[in-house]
Amino acid sequence: MNLDKKYETILIQQVGDHVLLITLNRPEVGNAFNTLMGQELYDLWRDITEDPAHIRCAVLTGSGPKIFCGGGDLKERNGMTKEQWRRQHEIFERHYWEMTDLPIPLIAAVNGHAYAGGLEMALSCDFIYASKSARFALTEVTIGIMPGAGGTQNLPRAVGERRAKEIILTGKPFSAENAYEWGLVNELFDADKVVQEALNTAKVIATNAPLSVKQVKKSIRYGSQMELKTAFRFEVESYNHLIDTKDRVEGVLAFNEKRPPKFTGS
Image 1 (cartoon, one colour):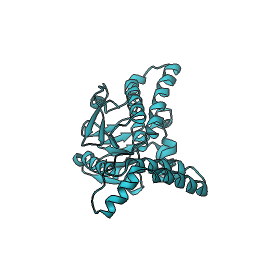
Image 2 (cartoon, rainbow, N blue to C red; image 1 turned 60 degrees about the horizontal axis):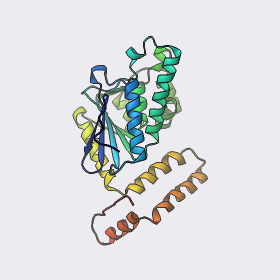
Image 3 (cartoon, rainbow, N blue to C red; image 1 turned 45 degrees about the vertical axis):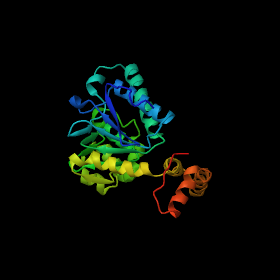
Image 4 (cartoon, rainbow, N blue to C red; image 1 turned 90 degrees about the vertical axis):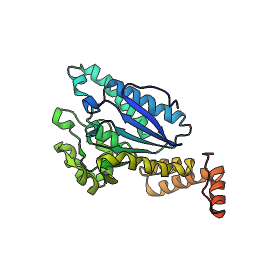
């Protein structure tokens, strides 16, 4: 991937040797995503997927102190024809699907409110750290649509079907404490610490064997959609891919030599 590429709606910054910080950068509209942001995020996810280079983990956050992402830009959508809306949503769909298929771990650092597509974006990450003052909602039914970027699928998998139905069918916001209690969010932090805590965790992940991390992510994602015994077999196949790697040899050798391993992703 090209870390020097410039975007209009997002910022990318390498942190340390192997971590990428991605910031939604439309604070004047609550980091709401418009067509251009959808295109730029899709482009970024494809770049990472095709060649992550030395990046081993990424963190996604929003600019500004209060809002992670308010969802789709309704001012841009106002007055759209059916065909214009459909074409825009096709871009959004591709962005979310590519994001979900990202080979490296992606942590959401929800620094503020995450509504509608903003919450769906956080749900598409591997796990979520959030500000104690953040609020969450899937508000689509209150404006005549429904979640269309994984919300009806990812939310039930995170909080259970009955809780997800209540959240989606009412469209009511809920607190960060609720999100943590229901299993949506892994950890809560003060607003000014969320991003740094996510980066700290990303750095820990990035010290582990890159191929192992990728296989774990793949095994959990696809295995969870399979019948259990088939999933066990899928896990073993993923495991077997790691046996003949230099990192496996290095990991065992480093353990026996009582030193930190030097993983190369090979």
